[in-house]
Length: 434
Ligand code: S3P
Image (cartoon, rainbow, N blue to C red; front, side, top):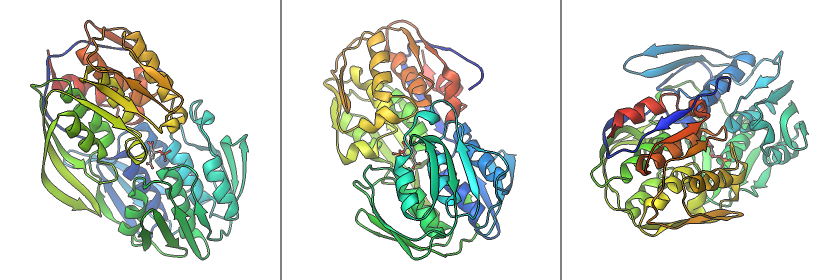
């Protein structure tokens, strides 16, 4: 990101009010990519306002896809996409994926099935992230991929792919979606086995655009050569962004928060179970289904927070929410322990290290482990000078931790919040009472 900005967060007394979130980041990426491959036009309302989803649109434009952005009061950020009927144009320059792991990993499955060479690159953080997880299966399907020691930039020579049967070594929805997209463009059937069930937006989105996808337990398969039809969709509010407000509300027994039009997909909503287990009261109204995705309005009331252990399949389901759960952990009665989370070390920052350093700077006790941490409860934290480590979820998580600290907290490098949620800090300020 170009400009550096620091934010000072003052302690709060309560979180109160009502909020509706921009569209879910995971769904926005997938809809944009599938709209680009579909026949006919698509309209995507409430498209994510994050820079990551803009990176996906930028790459699609470089691949010859025509789209237009419209700002509509009642529909949020609206993107009109003209479908290419499965055939994209060879890019004349490297595809700039910015900070977005989702863009590079999921789009690699699409360009691998196109008869041209694509280069995919990103910023410094993305250039450190592991890509072997997509390189190995896409190579097995027939693509030729060069990389910088299994990291970006990637140079993908695409062409006719063949379906494979693949057991994923890491639980990753990005990889699963990459292979489903490649499978759509391949000859024959592609079968994918996941170690744990990960978010299923790839499968749901493919069905919304008219493809058939089969699921049996943690196995999913797709037949190549299916055609997609454009859709008119409204994207549910991002639950991973809502997580910061929900956890902020959880810090104060007097909090009352309403989150409208929020994504309630069961593969993403594990956070709500954990927050209820911790002691938050949550009720859901206005449940609806939008193109196969559940959406609802949450009414949340604060309470006193107990303790939680997150491990195995739960860790995979909560992977993006762990930073903010860690940020509220010291204020719980008996703390939070996270296991099986070594994937956090290869996110936008090494999130286990970022969490540990910032919590310790606030005088918290933290036991850091190779694949997680244990944070005791009933701790008093003080305001401190913290770093975002260029990681949007770390910047936002620690603005939540700061709300119950003694004294002010300064967080450096907060411009990175724009990666997923540019409006985050003003919206948070509008909800807190001092
Ligand atoms: C995502 C999957 C997760 C998550 C990321 C978005 C997706 O990554 O951390 O923010 O949209 O599929 P992994 O697939 O690496 O677990």
